[in-house]
Image (tube, rainbow, N blue to C red; front, top):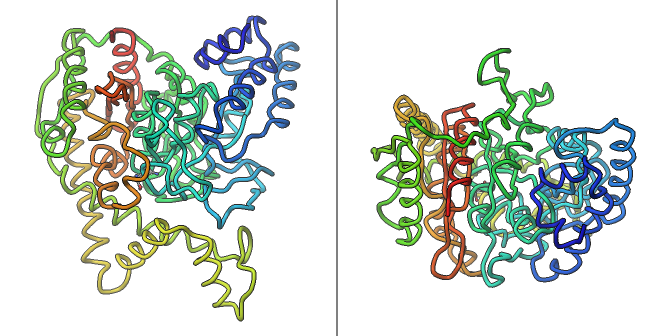
Length: 487
Ligand code: GLN
């Protein structure tokens, strides 16, 4: 098979061709490495490209496939991993200077599950520093560009993973989502991504940003690939105390997500929150998303508008909680045990101070300060505790909605991909762009982002479908049906 043909296949399609012996894993890996060689200088989707390691993994995969030891939909398929997931012995930087020399001694559970399924890891993708951002511009290693328009951001924080998929620099990728970081870059780059229910995928080995919000999930070319990857990475993990323990045999515990790839939404109840289409949304985004809602109606779903409520409180509550958790999580980067340490210092305190001053970028420092402030005595009740109460009310609003609806439909972001440079100068504006994604993390829900058309500049518009906790199958089924029937 020709390189062009290989890199255009979806991950599952490529897996089928590898299994059928039409192409080897080594050939597929070479095809992707060639593509990386051709486009990476423009896109900058990767922080680390592991050429030698990838070819070695591919050779091993081919041998094991030949011997009949390695089976499964993604055996031999080349993928990319966001650089906040640990891989033993491999540089894992979180796009930060403070971890620019960090090689973990263990591998994240989700990545290990992918490796056990026989994927080839091509490299680690670029991101906002410590996953804090919505544009991938806060990376210590410089920004990633949107493959659909190199003057635009790819979204963030998993912008490298989304761009790598969109530019055919990998067959699929893993990202992480604390407040939209899988769904929004998928939307900006025209690919598909799932943020799983909190607790569905192990966070072990994912460098923490906001521990009560973080989830790992797939970014891929289509819904089928996302379902196949989610099926692989969904595990109960004793190494993560927040990994969900679902009762065996219950519907929620079933992780055969590919069985939900059913082209039928007849009778499915879909709610469209009116409050998602008020101020601030770009008219073209609104039009495309509402057209998708009409499409669902035409396909036999019961589509209805409703008032969700609490929408305006999501961003303040999210930024208080995420920053509070981040300020605590990032305490460990002090230059003592691992990572960057300042070159010269006078005493221990001076070493901490200089290491952290030099090692963290401006956005990360801003959030550590915000988080330390809302957790400080005197402000704790006024901000942090209040934000937790708002979080509970947001969850309640969604619970009420899911009593009536199987799926909630809305936009991923208020706009399409923004020009590079715009958000760095105005962080509040960047935070406001997370309006449709952050409440989903506060409530712990699963969400999928799929393309639903383009604006007049040819930039992709993202459609978001949300489900009740552990109801990934419903959103996969809805998204798959839409994908099969969209023009
Ligand atoms: N943009 C949001 C933030 O900056 C979400 C990031 C994420 O999901 N990691 O916090």
